[in-house]
Image 1 (cartoon, rainbow, N blue to C red):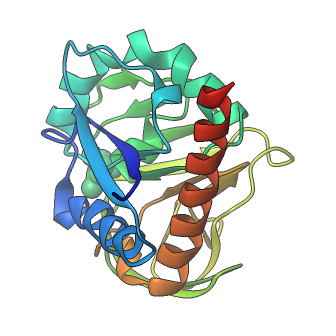
Image 2: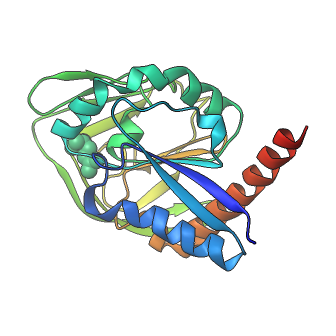
Length: 224
Ligand code: GLN
């Protein structure tokens, strides 16, 4: 019987714009190729969540309305998400999910959504343009091609701690000023890329390998 890799999808029913749930499907496919079954748990409103029960945490994108609903619930999970990220465990956050890692997100209607404040970044709104269209950027895993659609502009508050996920060739990425896409911190990636992003096999295979490593460590820990 194959071992089962456990994936937590934070608010899957609310945070899944532009096919982001495809990222989890691609990972399940690649993990199956390597001989693992996957169990994907939708961690939705009101549910209990311990990030350390999982080998991978995924957080997709959402519209401003869904983000404001998630904001009413997510603070309960702040500590477990922070500890999980700091323990070097793998996590991928897309667009609205990425924005949630920072301090706050200012929406186009002028509302400020309090975010998790687990990483030094914040997201603001400026009226002149929504960042929408194809993107291409260079990452340590090679070139990534994707699609973005967001009004939030993300800025790092501590550039010594956070590294960009990529350098833009086409499109906006984090904001119209920096020429950078997304964020890397330890084993966590934040990105504005939909498409889904993991149709880029180079990144998908890299993350699948990290998930298998995390799974083996978790199994070792639980056998102690
Ligand atoms: N609502 C957020 C924004 O517009 C995130 C959008 C998304 O996740 N696609 O910036």
